[in-house]
Image (cartoon, rainbow, N blue to C red):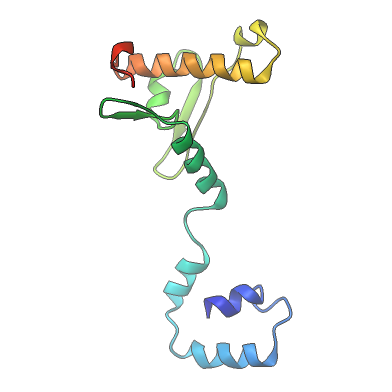
Length: 133
């Protein structure tokens, strides 16, 4: 049923008579809740991209992994920005302020901000530079 609905865009795109018949036959035994769960996954493509980026940019320190994600950021940066979220989504803002005066090169600016964020987060987690790997 999921394949038929997907291929026909829920019967809005070029559904054939055979597909309608097959769906009618399957409808009697289909688990509607399972079809709904499969058809509407809780993880979007954008979420998978964010997870991939977090994995690619990870830094481990002992038993701790830092990748500039998590709600711990709200506490670590309360004096300079804002953050929030819940179990599925998190986000925050840190104004670039004085950092933007140092360079107009986006990559260099990103490197500076990333280092400051990592340092501040490390202090929030009580991790010393010597422990980083």
